[in-house]
Amino acid sequence: MIEIRPFDGLGKANLGWLDTSFHFSFSGYHDPDRMNWGRLRVWNDDWIAPKSGFPEHPHRDMEIITYVRKGTISHRDSLGNSGATEAGDVQVMSAGTGIAHAEFNLEDEPTELFQIWIMPDRTGLPPSWGNRAFPKGGRSRQWVTLASGDAEGSGENDPLRINADARILAATLNVGETLAMPLDPARYYYLVPIDGSIDVNGKAAHSRDGIAIRRESALQITAADTVELLMVETA
Image (cartoon, rainbow, N blue to C red; front, side, top):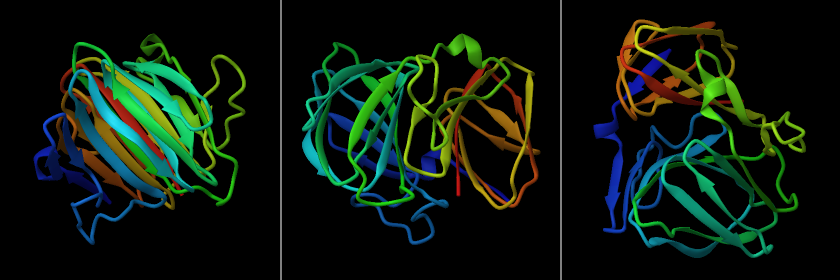
């Protein structure tokens, strides 16, 4: 099963400083058929104006992954963590028993990012935050794991650790290149081409479309453009 969810058909909200599209039900957008995909609960496609952002607000018992597409996002939280995450890099916040955070674009240019929420395997865990740079050069025609429930998370080049049976994967393809991978038909996969068009097992998808995949044993992606890919695999 492969379902293409066109970007233009996603839920929308525009607050002036924030222009966002919802792959799943979120805030004022509700679609009973798009509540989650396995343990993947939220995938928001955010554009944040310069010198603006999300003021401090709380979360609990959720794994929140931010992938920055363009610009920079700056983080601070109630644990005393702070840091900036740049384009191509990732931050992970495990909300656990509770954490409050603020996310701001402090730059002079807009920031574009994906905000991804995954339901944790266990509730009531200690909250934490971390970010890491992942050079794009290592993603050519191969998947690189950015965050994972299996990760140790301690080494400089390790994926960031999340408290969920899930992985966040990234790859890049040039025009005409193909990337194949085996799939577990029992798991859920959600793929988004960030900036180009692709063919996925014979189905066409375009920039920032959502591609929901399940009960497939293999995936073959062919790039119609030079494209960056982001995918979540989860129970």
